[in-house]
Image 1: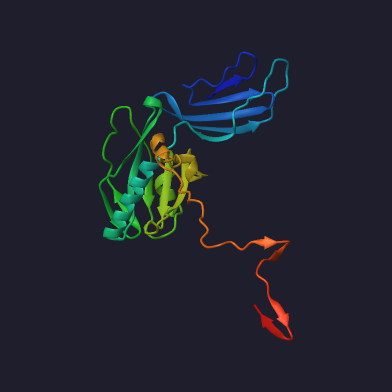
Image 2: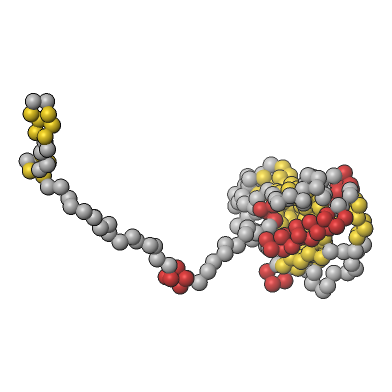
Length: 251
C-alpha cells in the first residue's frame, strides 16, 4: 500500500526513496509516482487524486502537477551528432536508424548515445541490445529516425515504447537541413508529449577573445578639399553681372 503523507507543519516533502505516495493537503490530495535511478528520482508524476482536507495545521502541497524529468538537458552537440549519423544512414541505405539513450545521475546527471547493431529497411529497424549498461549508467530511452518521412510516433513506436519508461524521440525529414522532431516521455504506459527544448539544451553562443575588438576601428574619410575659386557675393547678388541693352545680351 502506498505511503500516505500529511501536509502539516512537520511535512518536508516526499522522501526521495519512496516510489509511490499520497499526499493529503489543504489544497487537495495528490498521487506521486516515481522511477528512481541509483536511488535518485529520474521520472516523477504528480496527479490530483481528490479534494483537500481543511483542518487546523494543514498546509497546501506546492509541487506542480504533471510529469517531471529529474535530469539536466541533453547537450546540443550530442543531438547534432545523432542527426549526422541518421543522415549518413539515410544517404547509404535510404532507411530508418536508431540510437539508444543512456543516463547516469552521477556528476549532476550525464547523457550518452550508443548506436546498437541494427538491420534497417525503409520503414523499419530491428536492433540488438548491446548488453548490460556500464556500472552507474541506465538505458533511459531512444532516438530513432523516420528517414525522409515526417516526425510522428507510429503504431509500431507505441507498441515498442509503451512498456519502456524514459525519453523517446522520433526524428523526421532527416534529408532536409532542419529535421522534424516528435518528442515524448513515456511513464507508466502513457506517452507524454514534450517539446525538443524541454529535452535538449539551446545552442551555446560562440565567443572570441575580448582583445580582438580593440584591433578594429571604423574608417573615417578625411575632410573634403574644395577645388577652384568660390564665387563671391555682394548684397545677396553674384558679382558676375549681365546687362541687357536693346534686346541684346552683353557680358
